[in-house]
Length: 387
View (cartoon, one colour):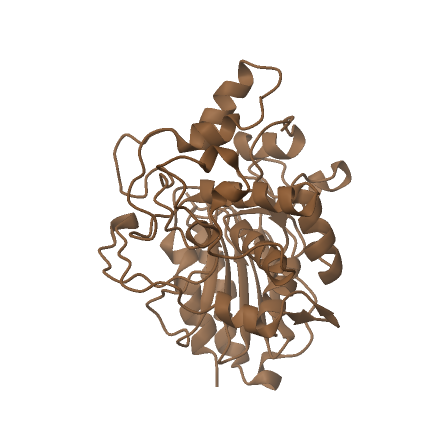
């Protein structure tokens, strides 16, 4: 049975697609594509923003804000948890500290976190964490294992239920328990936990909490006013969720004393805020007069850092997997060579094409499992609209 689709809601745009060299009619297919997925019950909602040459040319939302029967419509500025897109923001924070002379990429993690000072973990560097080559256990399910080992955040949750306060380093020891999956630098293994470690390093180096650092050094300067790790009470009714688990995170945030920083998975944001972040990277580190990073640093971050490093994650059998500093580089579609991106669980994506000066941000909250029609197919529509 088809679900009822709510009217489209349009966000602000700066120019028509035709004015920046895009086919308006062709780009308009995004509307019908996402509407069809909502009608088919594959998505709860969908929203997207397309910008070219620094100008927003498409900005739309459709569907329901929540899974509740009486839900309001999703809006172009609705807030959504963007999950792993958090990683590229964490990577930028680390590189800011590198530019400030406070860190270096080949620096052993053990210099900052004593639990890494063992014969097994001493060789792991910041670069390994940033490029998913640390050898630490990856996210559950990446090898299609039928019975996955509990991930460090789940261990943390179970331990927290039985204790009123964590001791310093508990979550790090839980993360490091067991053998490495491979020697550092030898294999690309997607590891969100590694970015929690990077968040801890940001806190130690800066003297601020991880969340406070991102707010003061990234969100505030870029005007990302609807980006945070805990949604303010006044904005919770404007935040998208697809079920009880996501709803609980929004309306009943837990006491995270002693818990790992949410460096790999935890940011809430909007289409426009993510566009501001993406446009900053596309501009070589600059946005509205504020320099977030140096041009050479950005160039390094979005270029391949790996050579002959294999990957077997999610069914791949790649002998030389490309990856930047925080950014994904591999894609098999019509995006220009050099396009970089990151996606997030729950249906979100940020794609940046430096050749076409194009930024594409989308949210497609699933009603089922990962939906390729929502995550992959829209890129064909956007990039084929280029004149």
